[in-house]
Length: 535
Image (tube, rainbow, N blue to C red):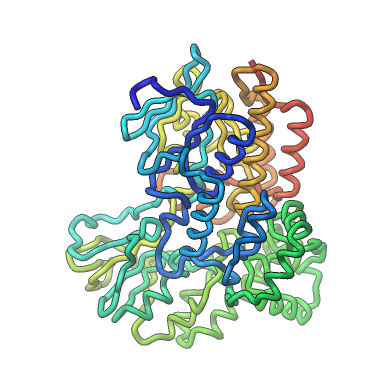
């Protein structure tokens, strides 16, 4: 392709679940679209995250597309919580079924997207030397796709292999007979540590912040259960869309933990713990995420379970989170995580007390101790939500860079649009429920809404549609106000950008609920896209 040789209706960045569905819907609506994808195939986060134990924490029957009843019925999930290989097979199945790859250019990273006011279009360039223009630019870059390497000096000196959970070698890694160090105990650490421990000669886990985690109770799906789910899919999907978190939880309780009898509360927490779901505990009482005293009841319940599982009292206390309320960082689901620390070949190091000083040629040195290691694993997470967007040089009207506009934290209208950046849409962007929900439900809602929006603009022969600064200010204030009503902004979480040095501390997702958010978006559309200007 030569510079300026291609003009499209839409360019889509990313071929994960949001980019794939966006391409499918734009085609249906009669738009010519092309997708650029940095990976060599579809799948997005499930293409890159191949670390041992990588799984979804939303149940398989709900972590799937709902737009095509035939697709729902034909695909067979095998486990309650699907593994990464199974989810990637599903993504490939979808790409094949709808012939998506013919409009995807793989192994191509978008480097710049600049708005040209004179031509009223986006000029997009890639690392492959492509340059094209498009009326609409849609960022389907995902929320957790920019892997964050740790700020530890000396990594270039390490003579052994090192890995990041978010960029795992596709051929897999064999740790047999090796002394392995894992840095980080977030979701990817909690999922991978039990499996690495089974393989390695010795595993040392370097933990800065202990995490709340609950047993996943994962199991193969029974034919009867699958048949029942598929029969109930229309109702199940509608329940998910109308729920707070995008899964069919049923009617939320209005009971308060602070007013409950202690024995009854314990019984309810036990039942929630046994459910093996992300929301099994948080959904037990209505005040757990808004009242510190209520939250402490559930936090102490989880800490007590950890003490029961882990034999060594000192290790158990190190693993019991005390520096943030339960649910204010994304809780994890695990299979044998805490019991892994009962193994003779596993050691836990508290790097808050004994910080990592440097990586050496043969391992790692903390302030007090030197550790000889053959391999290092960084389970250090992502520059979440804004990282993937700011990794591209996006410039709106008058050449203003998105990086500059978001220097104090992300500002958007509804999490889909940014004032000063016409015809630019962000799927599950900051200011939308995104990571606080079942991503599949939020992706479908955003894609459907965006396609309706660009169709509305086309039908009115408008060349641009853009959020107003006023509407954006009102929305940002609302997102902050709703967040401040909860305990979530009190934690140093990646929701706040706290895991990235120098990143502004802003609560990025919208915590008002998938159901409330959907209604707000529908109301905006019903009022001819109130808060947007068409030109």
